[in-house]
Amino acid sequence: MSYALIRPAADTDGPAISKLIADIFADYENCHFVAAEYPELAHPASYYAAIGGEMWVAEQDGEIVGCLAVSESLTPGLFELHTVYVAQKARGEGLAWSMFNLATDLVDGREGHAIRLWSDTRFLEGHAFYEKIGFTKVPVVRFLGDASDSWEFGYRLEAQDAE
Image 1 (tube, helix red, strand yellow):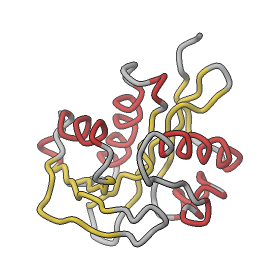
Image 2 (image 1 turned 135 degrees about the horizontal axis):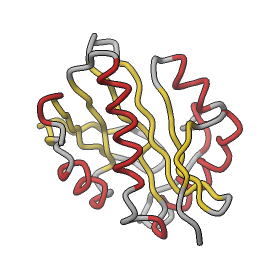
Image 3 (image 1 turned 90 degrees about the vertical axis):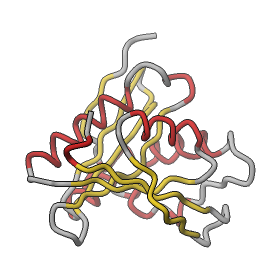
Image 4 (image 1 turned 135 degrees about the vertical axis):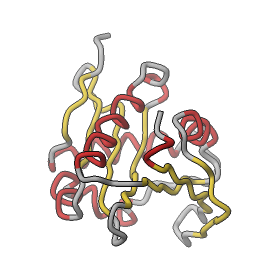
């Protein structure tokens, strides 16, 4: 096994990113990947570029094992983190951290002051990662009404809190 390469996502990466997410969802009870709920994955690079952001993927031995995206929000200076996933076999190698650093470089370059994200309440490992890198859980939970009946926690990171 070789080390993972982190690179900007291409529009052609959509099927591989979908597979990554579906494989991760399969580890959680009543967590279903339905492609129609992720239309951005039809053309991920173009989608995130169109909303003022970018997506990165981690590729190892020809397989996408991680992804992370960031975009501008409607509030000036506030960015949003999206689609943060790392395959079980690639966790603990610093991939999420490395992709997050690329996202914060983009945010800093655009004079962003905060990043927010939403995370399924079932994704405890992800919550631990977000809190480790400085995100604070906000007192808001939202229901998605998706195929998995997902509830999500909100998190926020102020620029001065970034590690």
